[in-house]
Amino acid sequence: MTREKTGLTRRDFMKGVGGVALGMTAGLPSALSAETKQAGSSKVILVRNGDVISATRDINGELVQAMLDEAMVALFGHDDPSDCWKQIIRPSDVVGIKTNVWRYLPTPPSVEQAIRRGVLQAGVTERNIDQGDRDVLQREVFQRSTALINTRPMRTHSWSGVGSLIKNYITFDHPPDYHADACASLAKLWELPIVKDKTRLNVLVMLTPQFHNIGPHHFDTSYIWPYGGLIVSTDPVAADAVGLQILQQKRRLEFGAGRPLQPTAHHIALADTEYHLGSADMGRIELVRLGWEEGSLI
Amino acid sequence: MKCSIHITDIGVPALVAVALGVLSMSGCSGRPADDSAVDMDQLLPQQISGWTRAESSVTYDRETIFDYINGAGEVYRSYGFGEVLVARYTASELPEVTVELFDMGNPADAYGVFSYARESEELGIGGGYEQRGRVLCFWQDRFYVCVLSEERTSDSDQDLITVARSVSQQLPSATSLPDLVNKLPTDGLVRFSERFFHLHQSLNYHYYLARENLFNLSAATDAVMARYAPGSTYLLLIEYTDEGGAVEALTSFRELYLPDAGAVTTVETENGKFVSYARNGRFLAVVLDATSETVANELLQKALGNLP
Picture 1 (tube, rainbow over the protein chains, first blue to last red):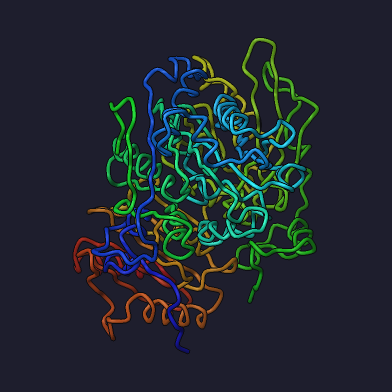
Picture 2: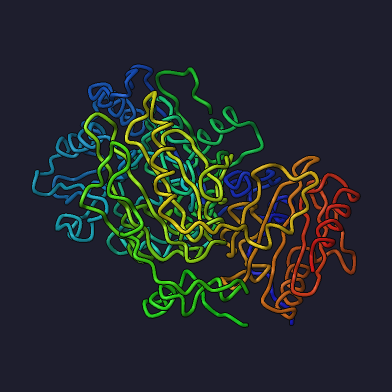
């Protein structure tokens, strides 16, 4: 019985089939050329501040606000951050802030509050703003939402490679349905009616990213570090691709080249090459760096 | 015996059966089936040194595991995991300790999940334990146990050992490695690199081979992968339920991964490394990323020499 080949193999990456981004994301030898359908580039802001995390890992909320303001200005080109929010959010919008409550490394309240302030500055009333994670399908504002803001910390993950912005929408559906092949199809989530075309901004929290796990699911503070960054973009795939590069570089510094992410976070590249949600190819990402440069790892 | 259970698709009735040992993964793979129902709650002590067990223990099963550990619950579901009991222990002047008692269905799968991301191993608790940061995990009989301290203090390393030893004393003592792990050649084996698993997703975690399930891995197959010196050569051994399964999987691997190989069984791939493979009855042995053809063939021959 002869089987027909339907998916990429490790050798395809070596040969260059599947594109630069996929090989890069998979931690495999880079391909020679990329074939992707998106045109143009995605703008990603990386803003960092060396003082935003204290020695005791407390987060300075005022600096978080300043960092997000700075990122918004750089991303949307207005002098006043509130004008940037007005560009992406209408006063009539019903806004769900999709956060992440993982107990060891949740989206920091200071980030959630800075986003909420921005939405309020755009003229949205309090009753039309809500935030949620595992309960989003039960929350009334999310059910009638017209706009979403997506935010979470990036961390390594034993089944999907990393917990990413793309993955953060998994609670909009039945999570196990997306677990096959290391969560390869996560970008399909973004086609759900409750999500599709609603996301106005993505904020990948890189204040204290997690670069390694203990066992399948345990957390230890020895595997986070005070990176002091936020990655902000309208393109979740591009933001994740930048965050992934940073995590991979951190792992190279800590462990050497012989310990790439396990499993490969190929859901990010596939969000580009198969689902066309955004750009995972660093060659098509316009990365704007703001603030603290030391140890940026990218 | 032919088994068609797919762990990730297992239904509630099958879960009950697994819990009762009537239809267990261990039975599928030829190991003795463990048909004893377990009262997890009775296995954890009420008192451990200065700690007292809190009343609010919680149990998560194959469906609710995601409420406790999100998507990483799939790692446990990729084995014969039935349920996990999570118990908290408090003491007046000591950090709170959490004990996670996973019923993995059989000893091989308890070892499997222990080996999944193991970086080191020490002997003295159960079949082996690993302590990193404020977490200590060990496997024993059909159980995988993790002990977590809320804080890392100067005493917490010893505290974790104290708690783990106390839990270990409550568990059945029988502990043996999966048969397939014992078939790995020892010469050149990188310590603690052995990974025991069943599914395609697990293979791709340890060594990304292909999106497609080239080896037809399933709950019914046992697989072990390990690294060898020189370089970082991988050896994969797979045990199928019958010879036909091994033949079919080898055909699939050759057609889809080595379509250019013809009748050759050692192939240089695009990264300048070598792949070598062979079948022996219902077993497959595959060498990946060998630094030379000689290295590939020598390791393959050693592996074949250990297979029945």
